[in-house]
Length: 438
Ligand SMILES: Cc1ncc(COP(=O)(O)O)c(/C=N/[C@@H]2CCCCNC2=O)c1O
Image (cartoon, rainbow, N blue to C red; front, side, top):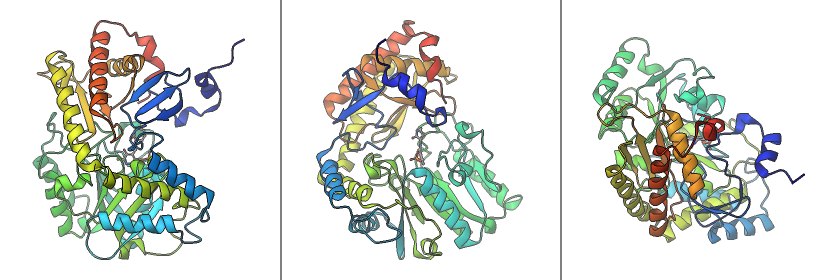
């Protein structure tokens, strides 16, 4: 009897409620921008582990920061004692995050808890209990953050009472233009959603899990202007596309937004559990002991955070994301000459999506099995990537910001071959049946 594989042991121990698996990949290590599979195979990681691995794996700056902080650990609880790494990271975040007036930083462990905190503290501090968000948005998997999300993966949970979910205008499938969405909001304000009851609007400046959608120019700015008129706060969710990934330090800077609160997660920890909310002092100082998590802001995770922000600066990762992202998306777009299934290649910087269609005229999405098969075949060919979208038809690329030109070429060749092989019927429905999870 051979020893059970990691995947078999995972199946026997890890709860399915915490899984979103796209391939049979089981990981035993990671170096640079590559993941090491059980058995020793090295795969190019184009997923960034769903975004947090902004510096890849084993980056010296993160290794050194974590090792130093854990060897002389300044406690494990910011809520009880200030610690140097957390305060330094807060100072850095305040310095790099545009905003007006005096502000404060809250630390958490995940994008979910950060948005959850933002919802709760905004309701308490403003006395307003309604929120505006978008169909397709993903703000997290805790009650509060899920309650203001609009992703199809969350239909098992009822939205928060009083939330208004607007369509997010998609230039590739203009079911609702930006103008029509704004007219819909105006109508809501005039009828069922009095604006003075709305605490905040939650915005992804680039809608990620909803399908890597870049909004039409000016839409988010116009939305902000409507909200400002009614004292409605602007919360920008930068968890997935923030911190240099979009080709600017903050993705909201592409949209000319001036947010009241900015939510960070994923990449800020470089792979360690860390999130942050930056917001006005009058909101974030609402009350002591209001949003407590014992190990949030611990010195090890925040040391990693400091290493991430310092490395973004020292390695010029903002400009690099813009440059390598353009190289990557242009090369993927060029594949469209060979593959009719490629309907649209879009994104900003190194947040890139390929919208897969049955037909370029109707733009009807391909079935999810097709998307899943391309990812499965990509895994077999040596690359890890994922899919998003409300119709599960958008290949998602969120690679480390340290991706090299050679790795772009390697990744594009694998995507090219994977699409060709799926078209040739080399992947069966049975191959992907256990990976169709959202
Ligand atoms: C814009 C945005 N905001 C908040 C979150 C929640 O972050 P956490 O999963 O760290 O709690 C996310 C997380 N997104 C999902 C996480 C589940 C797996 C699918 N891929 C994601 O990136 C997000 O994209």
